[in-house]
Structures are given as structure tokens and as C-alpha cells.
Length: 143
Figure 1: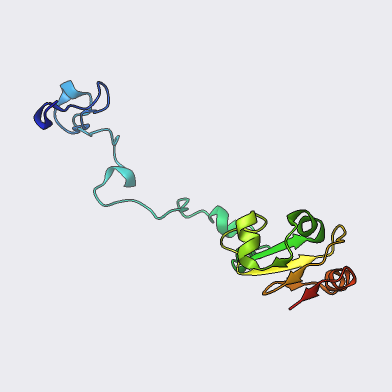
Figure 2: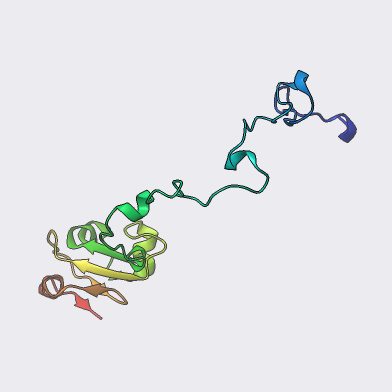
């Protein structure tokens, strides 16, 4: 095979639609724009969401709620998943490698769901008050 003999697969390339090139093309005269009106004019169009002067939908509906963009950097891990993990020392990197938290996580907190029996040392990971007492009761520590 030579570089000058390479061709795209059959049907992969389509001829560009040439508007305003006569009646035989099917897109002559008005070139598919219809007659008159703002959309038929050169440069005449409207902004996204414009409804011809009617109050747009995004302004008719009430503003409601708030979604924080910083929440995607927060993650939580349960005591039960720490028990299954089975590591003596747990930090952010270990949790990411185990797949318990996402790669984008910056703040991780252990929550008191389930039970823990093994001793676990937490470094660089937060814990709720109840989770901290449960970890310390099992012989672990939270730093």
C-alpha cells in the first residue's frame, strides 16, 4: 500500500451541501431559508433561549436550590468498608488505590456506618466524632 493510494471507506465522505446554486439542486433561490422573516436574513438570528419577546422559560421558572461545586472534591468512607479494606495504616492514597474514593477527592471523612473490630491508624483522613470513638475503641487512632 502506498500513501497516494489510501482512500476513505465507501460512504464515509459526503459532498458539502451547496445552497443557492440553481433550481436543479433543490436548494436554489431562497437556499432552504424560506420566505422573509428574521431567520431568512443574513446576520439575523437570536440568542439562545429567546422566545420572540415572550418571557423565556428560564426566567418564568422560579430560582430554586443550590448545588455546591466543591462537593465533588469531598468523599466519605464507612467503618464497614475500612474493615473490609484490611490495612493497618490508612491514608488518602491507600483509599484512592483501593477505589473507595474518587481520584478527584481532596477531603475524605470516615463515617460511623457499620462496625470495625481491627486496629486502624488514620493519617490525613478525617472522621466524625462517633466514628473516631469507634476506631479508638477498636484500638486504632485518628491523626
